[in-house]
Image 1: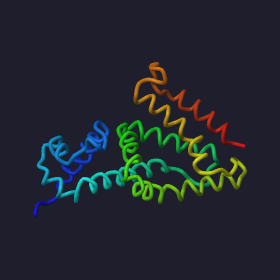
Image 2 (image 1 turned 180 degrees about the vertical axis):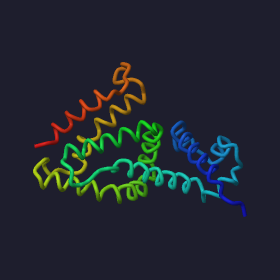
Image 3 (image 1 turned 90 degrees about the horizontal axis):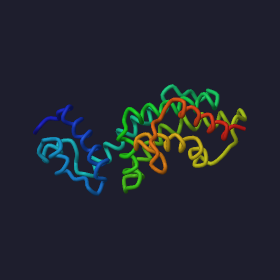
Image 4 (image 1 turned 180 degrees about the horizontal axis):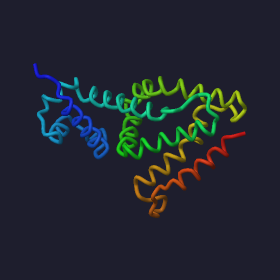
Length: 196
């Protein structure tokens, strides 16, 4: 039996993400991935049971990595503004350092893998963010609201700016590059909209 090669396994993950970002889940195949990695298809089956196993394992691993990055340094006892600022910084830094991941996760979230991915991703993340939110509401810093409303107001502007930056243009094709000034100006508006 052949043994696992961790460098080769990392290459497989990197190329799988690259392929899914470029061609979508529909255009992804084990044969294409093997060619991109310069390995035989049989080698892929040392690491993964099948295509679904590969995609789900990569999504879960990357989801854990992203979740850990998003809650790094987040103490549920922080003030609402300070805690949200940490979350924005963490998300921004993680997404800028790993630009393919937004598109990869978009692919996963709009597929049959979504349920398993979201379930595991939220399990750890939800606890600390839930405590942070409960504390902010208890202190009267923000009103109680459905999580979906909070998320849409708190993070959708950040994700829109990052998407504009990644695409190099904003709505209407106007050139766009993210700056710290734009990031924190937007953050201040979001905080103002959410605080009592």
